[in-house]
Length: 172
Image (tube, rainbow, N blue to C red; front, side, top):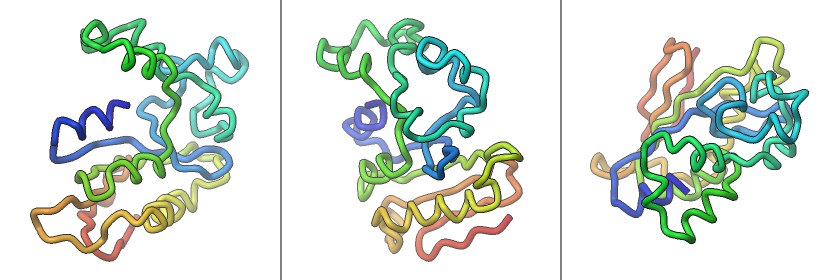
């Protein structure tokens, strides 16, 4: 919802942190664990301290990622939500990269901060390729004039930074 609301304000770009689920689905998550921003402690207490990337996408989809916002009101804006927006936030789920790309396609520049999964993650070695494949499959525009939306990537360790407007090249 926050990305959609931001696009409604005609902003230039969106930023998101991307990691990958245990079964290979790139998704948006800033925190290492899910404890602060989801109800993982209520639904799956045994998983609450695990890294978010060490859970399957089916588990991640079951979590509520909006109630924390209403409860903590981190930006002092929850009271300004309309009743329908309040209901939407209350039922917010974790966003996949695919969902963000569909929303932003042709509407905004994206800055993606790629957060490496843990060392023992089955997709640690292929995370960048899987994420790239998700972007390419999405149809996010690859050939844009300089004043049009584009896609930028930053890896979590900042070893490589690429401004990507055409063909994607990732180096680590």
